[in-house]
Amino acid sequence: TSISVGQAIATPDSSKAFASGNSNNYTNRYHFIQIPIEFSTQLSHFKRHNLFLNTGVSLSQLLQTNALQFNNTAARYFMSNDYFNKTIIGLSAGLSINLLKDNEAPLLLGPVFSYSLTAIADKGLYDKSHYGFLGIRLQKVIKKK
Image (tube, rainbow, N blue to C red):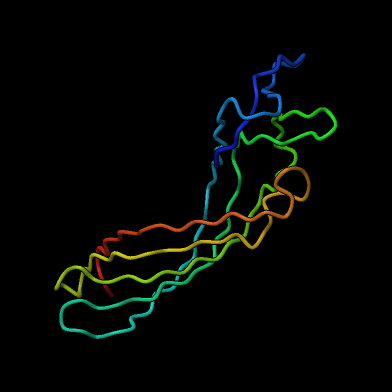
């Protein structure tokens, strides 16, 4: 995510802090390790291009973030990982179409959507916010059983 912040502020502990404002853009980054469990069901049986529905759940652990929080009293942004929930449970869904004629080892392409059931944080700037992702998945199945 990207937010507009003011000029950098020197802090006694050398942590990142910024004044409120819109003179600079700051990019928040989140680094997770994730264990997904996904189920796939074939929806159609066309001769060439089969359609699949993918659904799943995931358990994610926040490893590191540089995301800024906002202090209303001091009117400044600051960095603190203490505000974030470290363990996130999420859901995902998507559709895929087989791009190859080979149904034994398909090449699947399609949209995917993920959403966190767990809130990003319980306090601060991201209080009760959730992660969401919309993208395109390309998947090569090595061997179909």
